[in-house]
Amino acid sequence: MSRNPWRALEDRSCGARARRRRIAAAVAAALVIGAGTAARAAADTSHDGGTEVIELKVRNDQYAADDKAPEGPSLGDTYVYSGAAVQDGRTVGHGGGTCQVVQVEGDTPTTQCLITIELDRGSLTMQSLWTSGPGSLDMAVTGGTGDFGSARGTARYWDIGTADERVRVEILH
Image (cartoon, rainbow, N blue to C red; front, side, top):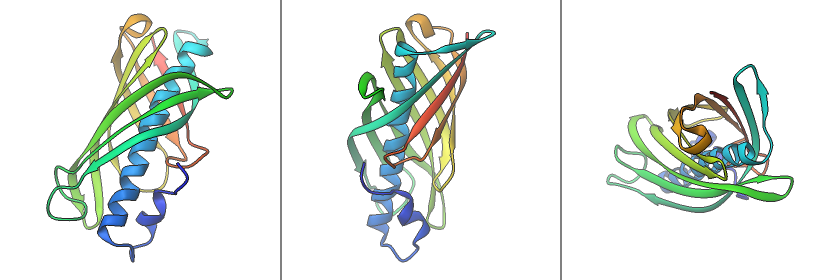
C-alpha cells in the first residue's frame, strides 16, 4: 500500500469517509502481515524450546469496506482484505480476513479482527480487538491446520499500512 492509513487517524480535519478508508487500509495491512507471518513459517522458522518464531513482510492486494449508516465509523462497519506473505522477495503464502467495528468512542473505532493464513505446512488463525491508532497490534494465535493443528501463541504487527509493515509470530506447539 502506498498511502499511510494512520494519517487520517492523526488528522481530525479529515472527513469521515477518508478516515474510514484509512482505517480500513490499516486493517487490511494487518491482515497481510498475518499472511506474511504464516508464510515465513513455511519458508524459514526458528525454534526455541517448543516456540516457533516466524517473521515476514506483508504485501496487501485486495481490500473492500462496507460502511453502514451512519457515514463514518459506526457499529457493524466491515473491512475485508487479503494479501501475500513475502520473504526474500518471493511470495511464501497468502491470507485473508475481516474486521468488524464493535465499539466507537468519538471518531475512534474498535474492531474485532480475524485472519487466516495458508502456508505449505498448513493454516494459522489469529484474532484480536484492535483500537485504531499508531503503535503495534498484538493478535492471539488461536489454532490452525496441518503442522499448526494445535498452535497457540501471539502475532505482533508493526508499521501497519506502510511499505515497512512486518509481523512476528511466536507459535507454541
